[in-house]
Amino acid sequence: MKTVFRDCKFLIPSADVSEMSTGQSVLVEDDVILAIGAYADLVRAHGPADDWQVVDCAGKLVMPGLVDGHNHLCNTHMNLSRAFGCHWEDITAHMLTTVHDPYGWHTTESLYDISLVSALNDIKHGATTIENSTIMADTAFAAMQRAGCRSILAPQMATSFQLENEQLNWQQTLDMAERCIREYHDPGSLSTVVVHVHDQWDTLEEVMLRGMRLAEKYDTKYVTHFWEFPDSRARADAEFAGEGGAFSHYYDKGLINDRCVFFHGSTLNEGEIDRLAETGASIIHNPEINGTNCGNCAYIPYMLRAGVNVGTGCDYGSLDVMSNIKLSLAVHNIMPREYKGISASQAFHMGTMGSARAYGMQEKIGSLAVGKQADIITFDLTHATQLAPLATSAIAYGPEILLFLFLRNVAGMETAETMVAGRFLRRDGRFLHVDEAEMLEKANHWFEKFLPDLATRRAAGEHYSRIIHQDFIHDDEVDLDALLKA
Image: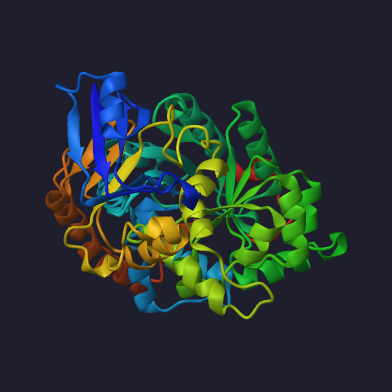
């Protein structure tokens, strides 16, 4: 079956603004892009067009689907727990009360409903591929399948705590990750599974090393939160002070390499960024959550100058990639550092090809080109007053300014069409395969239930998780075999 996105008012195939055009069309056959060009030329080469499905794009902007390089689709209720206070100065206390408790509270039903609504939010704002770092991986996978996006499933592994709803020891977390890879990892389709260590300080090093070997065995990525909080950075550096700090320790252990996708990297210094660039590891930038949760921001202008591949993510279920792209344009102009600012092209690249490259998908997605997967989004400009003054005449004079104006103002706007692998998830601003209002009503039930449940548990002096061993310890300080029985 062929579908044509006809006569695009603006066609932005990639971050290369020289490719921007007006009046061109994109022809899709089945799940791939067959041709790009003038509509008449497409008909002559690939017609007749009688049975083509036509999307009139004379008043629309057409571009590749966004790639959300890092999210937790199940955590949309999590920030409600901040009603009881935060503990940024003590990362261990913070994780217990504002992360582990909300995660451990979940049931299979709540996690499915909340994850699905979070995925729909990401999709309606432009994402076609979503990385999902999650607990209860089977349920999370089912929700992503229902949402219809291209999925990167990242089953969470950690050793210092157990959640009430997922009481796995360290060996069981590894077994669970391998089972998910065997059952769900199919890069030729819409499903990728990666190995996900939650963080270096709450996971024993032996499990990290086994996780890396697991990623190597199945040729997939190894992902983890990385240098996100100042407190965790300071404590990890103190732990490995004799080896030149935590970065040097993990680098020497082989846990920083080209298989790695690191979330945040907010507290990396210039020397560490230079070493990171040499390894080929990628960083996923999450400016909104870093600013509102951590009070910091990764040194992205320096990373890009150093040659680090950088993608963009949300890190929170009710956020979206396009808003984080806009924030990337703003925050790096005001950070008090030597190198400031990123261009609109760089910001666009991070939200598309940068995240795609991080997961080894750059040959399939991240741009619109003949032979690539048909992951395409459109924005209807006919009533988009916030996008004024996008003018097609500017393509000849300064396409970079058009890209800047679009990225600065499009945040929060919903797609008219969203196509993933040739299948429409949205047409004319509506989902085709799921009742969005019905799913939001289900999720709202859980949002209303969460805080009273959490308040009751806290009043009893209890949590939805339990501590298995201290954070920030060396493996030789614990008995791995004994932990299997903990």
